[in-house]
Image (cartoon, rainbow, N blue to C red; front, side, top):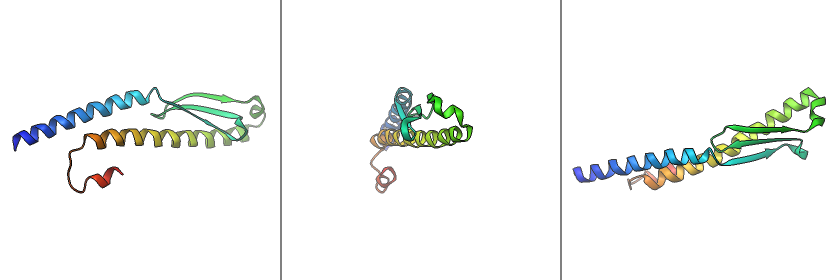
Length: 108
């Protein structure tokens, strides 16, 4: 019994280390999202940190339009980064989970 418990604890610790390594790696994964007509571009990491915003000069003439483009494009970039982040972390977590009946449906 203790051997199984120790093995499980070791596997959980190993999984936790893999999750932390994956989080660090996701800091280096960048995604780009653009507005319609590519007037605004946002570069974001898979950990949802904005790295760069590029704004076409034509948007600087209309503050309301610029604000709308920023909101829409940043939200799309965050959604894309969240999808990548969750997919990567779920894969690592699922790989390290012990085979407990009924638990596999949590990571689909």
